[in-house]
Image 1: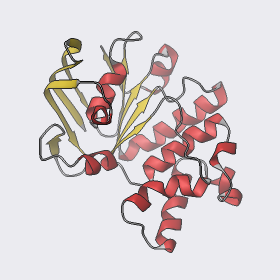
Image 2: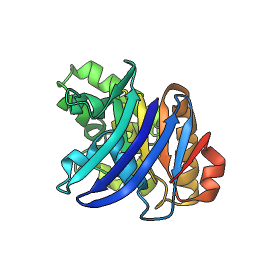
Image 3: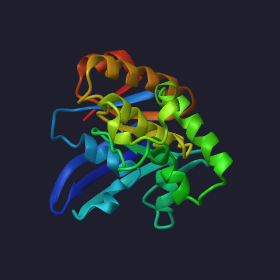
Length: 221
């Protein structure tokens, strides 16, 4: 669950969003819509404090709380562990982020950062994530090959698998299909529908038809 109350967001002396209030429930796809440049991505990044890695002077007033399995917690509480937050609240970018390494290493990257688990458990986690992302059957026989050889749609599902391997409870999708063809878009939409059964999903989308197909709730900014 994600609960946003009286949120006001901006950069420097510029206010991007004001008086934002909504609740995104577990087991649903909540779609955030607005015209281009109206703050959709700014809001999505604020939920797992991704702005902290940017140089811009971002600020937030109000409250953003998430329940990632341990009850509602304020993500802007000074005691909030950013690493733990981003492990439980994963962000999937508009353009798929593929690391210059093998398919297997891409998926395992986050787990290794978290403590380099034993090889057998690492392999099992990678396979589970790829299966859940709907990519295992397409790559099972070439896990050691470069991920950069994958199609664009496969790269996006690989990026999702890399997030899923850390077992997040909340998934933030920032227009994940905007650069994909219709077939790849259909696969991502079907994947989100499967993933929502055990997670909270927020999706930024400018595609009205997509909103009709996948949204359980719609937030207009």
